Length: 541
Image 1 (cartoon, rainbow, N blue to C red):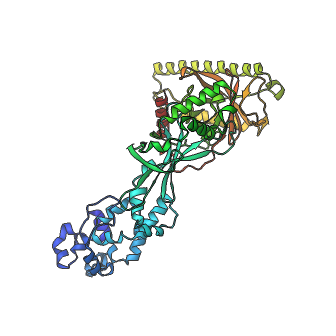
Image 2: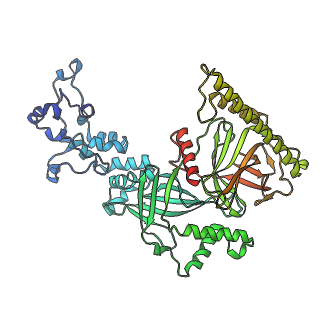
Image 3: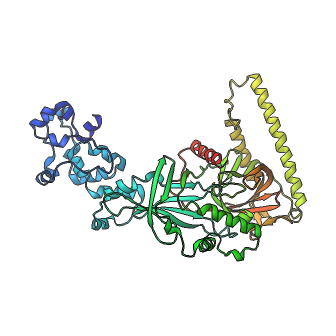
């Protein structure tokens, strides 16, 4: 009632239908204040009066008559939105969120008729979803901007953003965007191994568009025979699934052999004859057999980009990294107090997607030797293992100190300890301070070279670095058997590149930032991001 009174200027003194229906009937304005119970954006501006009534009544002629001066304070009449010119109401309504317009349409038939104006919905399409195409062209097909908003954009708004497909250990990165008058799901693929600095590749998996007023059409884009019939089901807020209804469009005339060779050229940029390493051939064939069985019938779970703060070593985000025979994989770098974590978005049979591939201890920077001594792997190993032992002692001392505090019960004036064993507010401040101190002391750059015997897929790695930290990397056998964290060295080269030396494997991974502006991918809160990380890791396990 309060909303109705504010919008229409009706109520006890203005003839609200619910409180003064008789007064409305006496002045012949009952039709203008008749509420509409439809709340779906698809129906906002639809229905209402008949065509004959619309032809007989004009918005200009439906403004309520002025009321006596005594109706308002200080002898002035209360103003109503209905007294404003229709063109001004169009501007006002067009500035409101599209999700609020159905409620507005319920106020009265006048508002409902104004909400049929396509200018309002054209503005909502542009401001809320970035649709910049000339929507006037839709008139040729009989589709209105309100149809585009309600039946396409608003209906499928929950699938916009970044998603990880459930493809066993391999995962993936899907970006669903509004592209013109389409909603398209783009699968992002790393560049061909080992060119980690090259831009990402992408291909469409599905698209949704509105060809007629009835409903939106979902099409599968998988394969090489063009768009064909598909289906999308939104399972819950952060999960949806796709299904292809014509999987025969995915088949090729040359059978599985032709399909494999085509996939190999797209995935790896080479033929099987070009790959001489037998183990790599086995991994590639295994991935093709595993992933092709899904036929684009997949379940996707939402992922967020990591939140950032001024204390972060570099800007967090998505990176491409080299992983030996497995090729390039996508890793998400995020910061958590005095720790930084690299979580796999794509994975392999050894370390599946969702697992934490590397962890960096920002409280323990490493002072590497000069270039000549750095070439000696045993010298680097000695330095790292000394820090590893120091970290173990500190962890034991912290556990002992925590037990002492719990027994003494002297935490009345102290911040409550985190029951999960994480850092408290004081610990976070110390970590941030330690991180800031190490960054301030770190030189702008220093010479860097990989030790002899360390294998790198990309020999064109940077020869200068800013700073190094102690870290651990996750290794495991095939099928994620016997996983363990082993010591390593995190090397920060610049704002967009870092590396990790795996001591036990004697190998080096180079990571390069994915420079794509993803929309609708920000986490609503730090807690939501942490929960997302926990969920994808539990699924991978």
